[in-house]
Amino acid sequence: SQLLILATMRIKAAAFLLLPALGAAFAPSSFVTQTRYPVAHNRIALSKSSYDAKVSKSSLQMSAGTPSTALQMGDKEPETKSLGKKIFDAYTKTANVATTLFPLWTVICSAIALKKPTAFSWFTTQYFTAALAALMLSMGITLTPKDFTDVLQEPASVLMQFSLCYGMMPVLALGLGRFFGLEPALLAGLVLVGSINGGQASNLCTYIAKGNVALSVLMTTATTIGAIFMTPLLCKGLLGAVVPVDAKGIAFSTVQVVLAPIAIGMTTNKFFPNFVKAILPFAPVVGVVSTCLLVASAVAQVAEPILNAGISLQIPIILLHLLGGLVGYMLPRLTSFDEISSRTMAIETSMKSSAFGFLLAKLHFGEYAARVPSAVSVVWMALTGSILAVIWRYIPIKDEKK
Image (cartoon, rainbow, N blue to C red):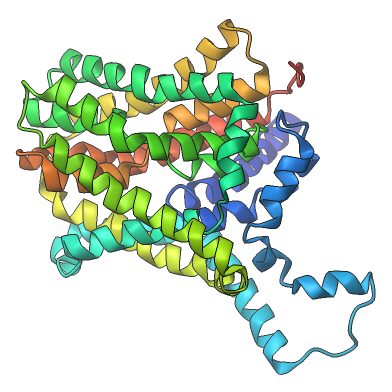
């Protein structure tokens, strides 16, 4: 009976950790940054000063629920709160609960999309593009030019993960697609998933796995910017003879959806910091709504092909994310990277920006079915990254220093 109780407790603990990780799999970076602060107690590879500088510019004010001026008052709490402060505190608590339950909203929206695809027919390509750009903007307003110079402090780790993202994953996707005999359009869609940048949800999963969160942010930023030239080159090189691919269109869409919003966000953060500070608490709720619509719209548009494809499409997509994570861990370990950095690179490699892949497939691939793997990947990417994170959380780290 004691063994049964112990097993039940472990299952409950794992479920508790897995739920928020799944939620953040689609949430904007403004939500993820709220979770970065506790990791300041970890022995991360980047210098403490650079990480503290990053945190000070993030959206942690929402979690704290206290204006920065209150920090100057010491431990003394005001005896009474204004009506506005009470309303804001109530909003903060409600928003945090809603964001934590994000997996539930995602599952509900996806189920509705599969059952009744017409429910999301109004969410056209223009809305889809705008929603993705808004999520990239939420990442941009938390960045500064210093974040890019910080990459120079971890060049080996960033270059290793970059090569895994744009070297190993596309080739793995191509190999899996051919091994399982996918038709050309589905093969092209799978390779596209392997050729896109890392997703922002990796930052939270890295924290759960006891990885290096600051390094995770740098890697996500590097692969996101790298997608501007790497994704179109890989798609044209690997798929040019398989299906029609508009490489120039992919590059233009990447600049439009990725580079422009990030640049606008960084500029706004630099010249209008008070404005950014004021809107950051509302970004998570906007992100939850936007990304629920993104996921549901992607699933709804290819609901019939997803149901018809069955397990033959699910298995290679699962293996792409799972094997990608395992290789992304083992290769750094075999090349003398420490445990923390290796876990970080594994999760960064496994978790891809599948919603962005869906948009690119829809706009620039000649075959309709090419967008199906990205829609399926949205779910499996989140599950794989979260499961790896929970498993690693229960494995002690023996070598925290290089």
